[in-house]
Image (cartoon, rainbow, N blue to C red; front, top):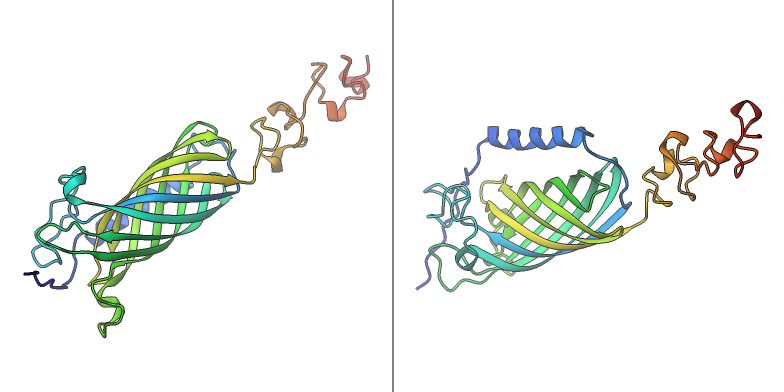
Length: 272
C-alpha cells in the first residue's frame, strides 16, 4: 500500500544560510584573481544528471521525512541517486570569465527514502551566472548560481491541484570543474544545492556530468591576448607590443617598423 505524501512547509536552510551562499558567489564573481580571459563566446552543453533528495537536512514536518542530515550519505548512489536526464544549457560570455545562460532539465524520481513503487517526473528550468577561473588552463574550476523553478510532478498534469503545490522557485548555488580537451570542446562535472523558496517545493541536490561545445573565440591568433586588446588579432604577437610581433627583435613592433625583417633603431622607425 502506497504511503500518503503530505506537503508541508520546507525549512531546510535558513535565510542567513542563503545570504551566505549568495555573498560568497558574488565575491568570487567580482574578483579577477588568477583569471586570464581566453574563452569561447558561447557554450552549449548537454548533461547526464542525478537528483538526490536524501542529504538535505529535512525536518520532521517536511515532505518525504525521514531524510538525512546535510551531506549525510552523500555518495550513496544505489539508494538515493535518481540517475537520468538530460539537461541542456546555453550560455554567453559577458565579462572576463563570467557567463550568463539558461538551462532546462528533466529526470525520473524513483528513489525517495521511505517511499516504495514511485515513479515521478522531475522538471527544472533556470537562468544562471557562472564564473570560470584559470581560463587558459586545461582544468578550470567554476562557481555557479542559478534561479528558476523545479519540482516533482506527483499528479499535477490533468489534476486540479494548483501548480505551486508541486513546483517552486529555486535558488541553486553550485560548483564544478571544467576539463578542456580542445579550445572548443570538453567536459564538466558539477554539483548544486537547490533550495526551494516556496513553501511546498522540494529541496534537493543535483549532480551533473556534461559535455560542452564552445563557439566563437576571443583570441583568434592564440597568443594569449584577447581580440579587443590585440592590435594584431590575426597574427601571434607579444604582450609588451599589445599582441603584435617583432620579427627582427629590435624592440619595435612590426606594425610600427619600417624594416620589420631587419634590426634597426627606434629613432629611425626601425631602419638600420
